[in-house]
Length: 295
Image (cartoon, rainbow, N blue to C red; front, top):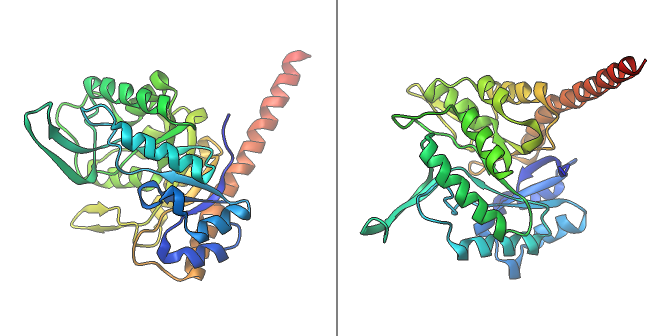
């Protein structure tokens, strides 16, 4: 069963006060590794008391890596989900470390989300890691598509095919980042519409929206700039296909004023509001077709 989240924003300490004062914020997402379960920030506690949902978003599991998931990291993510009363948790389809005992070399932490090669071998590894994570987490897991500057040689699947098969084999939910789809469109020549067409809409947990900038022909997913029109256009394409359970604005640097954040949230609502209208039209059309079929 999908959790209806609504419109949200990434909670960060630098904008905690602004987030508390923003009108119409239904939920917030917090970086899981930045929260200590025994010392949840007062701002988050106040938001929860108001009925605002809090979702922990992990960045360090590295489920796309060759190693099996670190059980201590999984336990920590589960603990944060329980401490925050979260209806789900999210992570990334990425690897973040390499080396170690399996290779005979030192373990290396990338400090960055690195893209998983879209091959069947890599998909097999990812699926098994996801199953292990799902068994240890007390709530459903949603996985996010990431941005990349380039693709791996010898890839066998498109992004949409890779994500769709991952869902089919594991039942995992999807966190669709439309800014990352735009990034991969600019940097890798991939069509966001093709990826969206391949995704099972019932697997959608929520959506990320964020800003960036283009330099030297590459799109940088900075999370430090206003959301541009092309990213909102990808969100609109997604909304043409389904009514997303939740949409969240991400901002991680160069934080703007509260009125500017509110204006960006309004821009997102303008797009998602259309999705709600279209969903009602689709539902009405389906009901009408059912009545006609029964006559």
